[in-house]
Length: 102
Image (tube, rainbow, N blue to C red):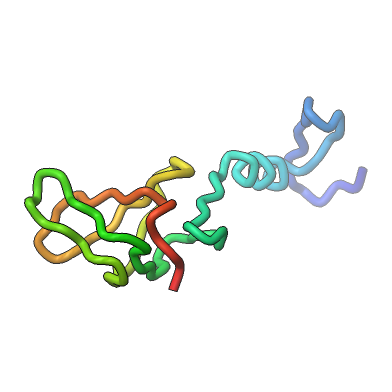
């Protein structure tokens, strides 16, 4: 084990000693949720999506039509939900199965 001045920690999952920064990066990667759209594309924060079907928005008295562009989505940590903004609708959360990455 080379001493580069960094702190080493024991990873119980792999049974190895590794730099603390590498272990933290591995744990962050393992905790990340993969969100996929209606056709299987992986979504990321900031992506633009279009709706694949008409959706009635509860509480807003409004219907979003198929093909509506939603800009700058945010992932919520749930594999099925994305948070987004749309004119006149606050706190809009859409299911990933109803959008397609643009």
